[in-house]
Image (cartoon, rainbow, N blue to C red; front, side):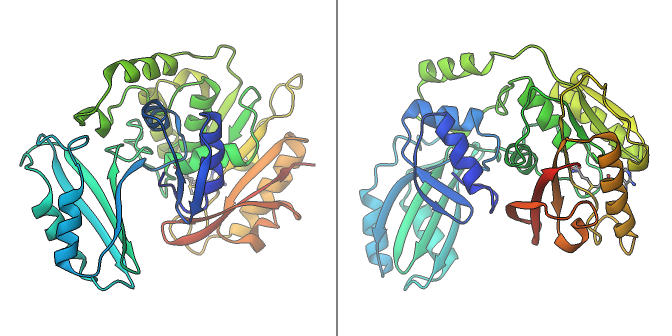
Length: 358
Ligand SMILES: C[S@@+](CC[C@H](N)C(=O)[O-])C[C@H]1O[C@@H](n2cnc3c(N)ncnc32)[C@H](O)[C@@H]1O
């Protein structure tokens, strides 16, 4: 399982709900054993993973002749039947065979015939200290590309990261939710999908469906499970001061089929409305501007302090998940928040800080 660095534990917990135990964790990935059904289900149900790779071969080689010999021994027929177009992603570290492009060439030559214009079949090759691990991608388009996020406001989050923030901040999907700085709406839309019990992979296709060993009956039973939905949706609010952002959030939600579950508001954080008083405390998960990409030189201290003040006033007792790049700045919202996730997003370090409004 490949995932954004920092979400490994969240993905391992998601796997556990599919009845799968991980065998290993490394930065940006979780390793486990899967049955065919679990492989299909992982693609369909994991909200926080990027792709599911299947290990095809492992071997230690130090020469191209040995590499060619080992590649000739692998039975590729379960995955490659000549209708797809293999594409190689090779990374080598501290290995005798260090020339990634030359390694990819040997793979290309060794694999069975392939279609020039067929769908791309990604093959991931990693070598560390001469130990090669060859994996076949079962997902196709990355799993975070759910197909609905075509409108982007500034600095959008990946859908998988938004889902990870919701899970790691401890939001109970039966309770109210607000993102007061929603941008293109990614967090609120993922919240609505979770509240509705909608599988993130519903309605899309996956690369494993092109494999010669594809099992249509097993896949049909997974897709049937994905179409069960939950009733009694909680209140979900997505707000932003920027009219364009709210518009893009709304169009994205419509494409995702959850627009009716979300109230959209164009409002600054200072005008955050309280939720109905009979509502049990809900959750706010938000990704305020970090400076740099979104608000160069803006007065972020003020914005963060306002978020804290308004949250305490209007949403006392509510849970909070705050994605920030500057933990000092986050103290303006509330001191003593817990560091629940440490992520790397777009080359920047970021933290999910969690807590509760007073
Ligand atoms: C980093 S972006 C959020 C991106 C979003 N999570 C997504 O995936 O698209 C921060 C958002 O905060 C909004 N914002 C900045 N200051 C605000 C304020 N005072 N009140 C409400 N929204 C504000 C910006 O318009 C921007 O859309």
